[in-house]
Length: 360
Ligand code: DAH
Image 1 (cartoon, helix red, strand yellow):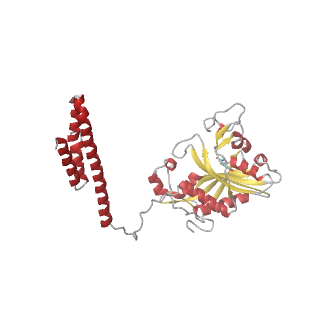
Image 2 (image 1 turned 135 degrees about the vertical axis):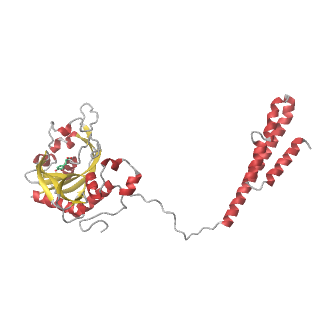
Image 3 (image 1 turned 30 degrees about the vertical axis):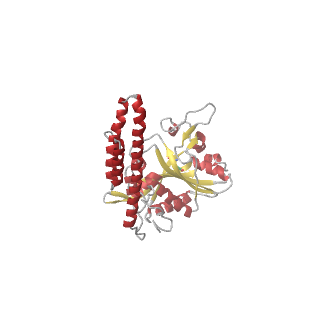
């Protein structure tokens, strides 16, 4: 028996005798590792004469292959034995409750949008949408906003590069262009009741302003619409939204190009432990802009202003959320910090309606 045969017998016996994966690995390292016996033999090939190498090369390689194969077989056998042992040992209690899958939560902005849709649906309003990339006509001209209006300035509005002869495109600065689109879609001869929640953009950034924010637009077009309808609608909406009956409103004369007359709407707040809470009348807080739709705007939407009237309003959704749910930094809304969302987020379907508060 040559030395190689002896080594082979010895290694194969060691492999076979390995009682576990660790022991098997020790054998593997001893034979095939950097300092292993077979590795050492392979290194001697370099110093041999070509004739000798022709004889010894295949023998040493054969040994290496045999040992490698034996180790692989043994490893498979040990793995199988291990699995069998575990299957025999472990039991699975199928009656145990499953691990919970972490539930997501609804972002306060989405929550408020759902609340708005729900409350206004009860008043017969549909939800309308429009593009966030608008053209200058819908965003400004059709809304009677003159060329000289500061909102049109380059430093307030995000404009797209202008192509020759193309319409001037921009990120809409408010949801009001949806008024025009809704009127056009209705065809100039049907009453309209819509709200249009969505994203809006302005070149502005501090603790109370972010370049992207959310607004909701409201529009009613019908015959014989008056300021009284506007006031009642807003009052009914704000009572349902803030879930309080003691909501008082103040309409302050103001100016918007797209309404005449125009009013800024303040809502009364009370001071509770030094904090402002909507409801009561310790002071006033501005919550939205509104007015009777300007006849130029009614015309731009394809309606006859001698026959049809309407009211409109526009309101910051993020601010509504802050007032109702007590956050004080607007920027945190859009930071995407999961801890903030865990704290301020909502479970699905907690939405107030006209007939009741959250969960009713
Ligand atoms: N578009 C106005 C803004 O972004 C808000 C607004 C005011 C909308 C009065 C209206 C309205 O529909 O009637 O500041």
